[in-house]
Length: 239
Ligand code: MN
Image (cartoon, rainbow, N blue to C red; front, side):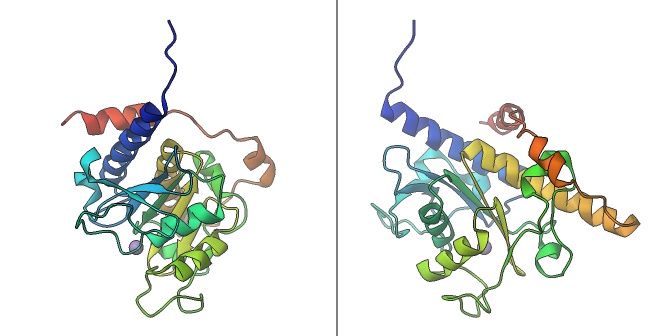
């Protein structure tokens, strides 16, 4: 017997994935007490879901809020919100293909945001990084930025989205990175493997000259579909 999936079920699935994504990314050290992950609302594609201002390791379904296309809350009910929610709203506005966004302060990735060492695909699991250096967003020169180094308004978020362009990852100078993908599960995979690629690349740079993936290898690589179930099982164990 097949059961037709209802819109409410699809929404519940996205919210469940979003909660699990928070837990996985916290466990993997992509997010710590800070950073956040969002998902486009399946039933209202201009809106997105994201937790209230809370450490990602602690997020439950009850903490998920809905935001409109200007990153303003639909029903705030006194809840505190992430100051940098404009990162998510503006990337989702600029990129109709993107369904989920991660913003991280990963210390593994940060060195590539403050030097001329390019972050590129070095390991096959991170082929999505491509063979061109990841773009670096700098609030000192971007419109809407101030001296906080953060993305605190729509103008700054739009400038970040512009720097991201059609890529999956944008570095943020002295701050972190933002990752954009076609699903919550995929953005979790990409955020984790961007961090691993950065870690391996930093080690490789100590030993010699990195032998990066080339464009033919990148074009032929699949995005592995595994990982999520195992990662989700680990974070569900303690529930
Ligand atoms: Mn931040």
